[in-house]
Length: 332
Ligand code: PBG
Image (cartoon, rainbow, N blue to C red; front, side, top):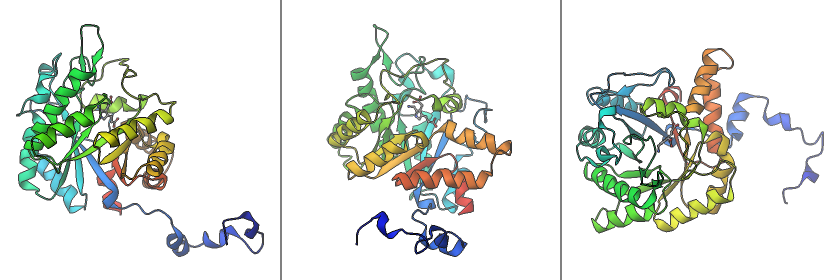
């Protein structure tokens, strides 16, 4: 027997038989979304940052070191295994060289020490990129030619990674798309005997319009900023695979595709072409589009959120970073 349309002749074959009743739909469902698939991104604000919320990311909070423990406790109770930390830095701490990124007492290092102590079993994933810390809003250091300097930037990323690992982070997630950052970080970790640190490489991160609300919530949204010189061209598929293969060779443990929904072909490609677990990031605008449409009664909120996540999983994602994670965990 092989898969052939020959066998599918009406009325011997009626596709609707196994769709009619809920119980059979459940039994034949090929994809199941569970809390084990989900990572909750969390924004941690420096104490100098006063605004707790911003209008472009509805229902999300910038947590402080004072109230983050309560939030994480709730997440743990809901069964969420891991969080991804992103800093919200005060303007006064941004600099040309992103100095605050390598401050061993920056808000992420402090947060790590706090959470590691209170939640020893929690997965803590740290974003490694300079954009929260630079005056330019770019993910790298600008050189005298007004370009993002690749090799200077990866040195800073390496130092930042070591600081985070020393503060209790076991998963480093470089999201900047500089060349050679994975090998540089991996070598540094090995040299310093941090042999078990996991690297999730944002290997297929596209230059996308869908990051806008994220840039608002980290407080560093430069109008018309263009990251095309390092992030992938959204029109390219082979190039994404090439980047991902390079990152595997450099020592990545898990590959990330970002954004998720419009890039499911890439999720499938990486799932089929590599042996690594694949993560997909349902980014800020994907979240906002669903939130805002649901608020206008354009569709049912819960059903749409679950559909969006199930489809990302169906495409091949093992891990999903989603701002809906906490809410979804309550429904499951
Ligand atoms: C920074 C970074 C971005 C996101 C995650 N890490 C924005 C960017 O590259 O400009 C976007 C996430 C989202 O939109 O939810 N390197």
